[in-house]
Length: 162
Image (cartoon, rainbow, N blue to C red; front, side, top):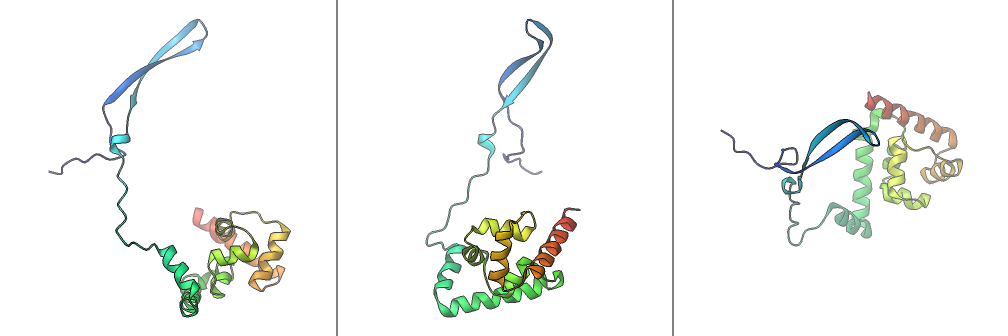
């Protein structure tokens, strides 16, 4: 038999009840009692970070500072573009990865945030013509190629939602 462990989805004992009256002021048409539950005791504790821990972001930032490490990261991104996104054709993500750039690097070129670049690559962002110009310049493509890449990634995003 399995032992039960507290979890976020588990129910707990009622901590208090409240009564809600429905209807017009002064003329109650129905009364409903509803229990109130307290789930704080059932949330999963955050794991402790080990001593001398280095996050992936910190490690990548260190490698970006070194020429050899930066070149290795660029080669890795180019490999990812071909291995994982080669069948997608030209999308903003594939074009960025083929240059060996991170989203952060492209964001710096566009003078925007990494999260904005992520939304562009997901196909959920409506771009201004100024952003399109910056993007085509940074990626070294013309606006027609960028338009096709944006349409392609939008189609991919819609297909994933189905």
